[in-house]
Length: 278
Ligand SMILES: [Zn+2]
Image (cartoon, rainbow, N blue to C red; front, side, top):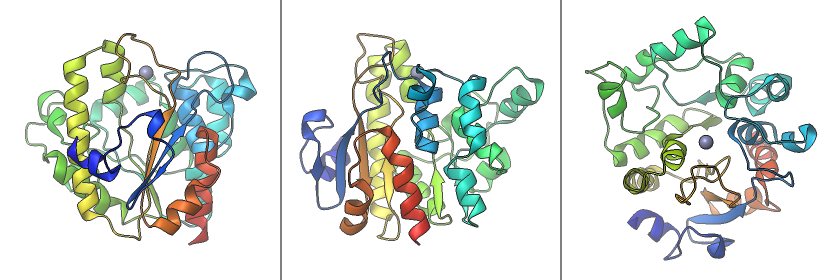
């Protein structure tokens, strides 16, 4: 992973490497367990990321993958997305969703996961296949290959990993705050697929390379996760491991953003302060 390696100035992506403040990036180890027993789960973890509220502590449990009514209540109450919308900021979830996703939601067979629930409850739309084709959104697999092979769009535009990274930056530059959600690594972790895990990490490194070549100091990028999984393929479950928070941007912005940042609950308030200051 040459790009990650260069970014972390030779350090590996392990807890022992954090905290690290480099020339272009800051690396922190973030606790996703937030003081509540049991393994971190996606609905509550993502809920924390967009609310800053310790939802597992309030409920007494971690929950996922999709939010139950108790978790959903926190997301309906207010999130980063709804607060930015109320403040007149331009915000988006950059993923494009296929028609079958919307069919599933409309028929009641599929529940929103926490992030799209937060987005739609804020009154924002999700990007569709038209947006992917028009270059306004990015495929959840970065490259768009899955739209051709699995989603029935043989003419879907595809990007290599490097250009997907560049695209992510150019899309983000259109917004005050944007989020891109990636979950293939969670699937690979649940399926304990080492070969896929390596492929995904190498693809991520390519994306990172494009992102680093395209980014300027107007943008602050946070790469993090709601929980660990793929780093330990001896179990098909999530892990208790700290998750990395890689922050890329100007040194001053990174220092302010990461101050006192220790667990998932610290991230949403830091984003809130950073975006609202401008
Ligand atoms: Zn999972």
